[in-house]
Image 1 (cartoon, helix red, strand yellow):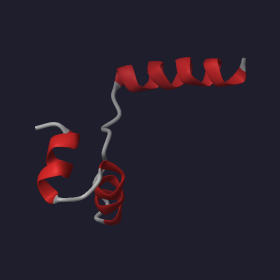
Image 2 (cartoon, rainbow, N blue to C red):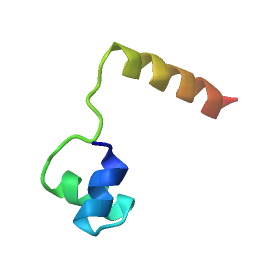
Image 3 (cartoon, rainbow, N blue to C red):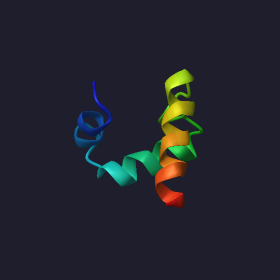
Length: 48
């Protein structure tokens, strides 16, 4: 299930559900090789 679908089932907004997961020390995103590349791209966009 998607994060949005689970948030909806829980009755919380997406941001509230993400906050809840953070409080439970559950990672919303599991970093992998693609994550590093995406962060690099994001950083270059933000610096321009």
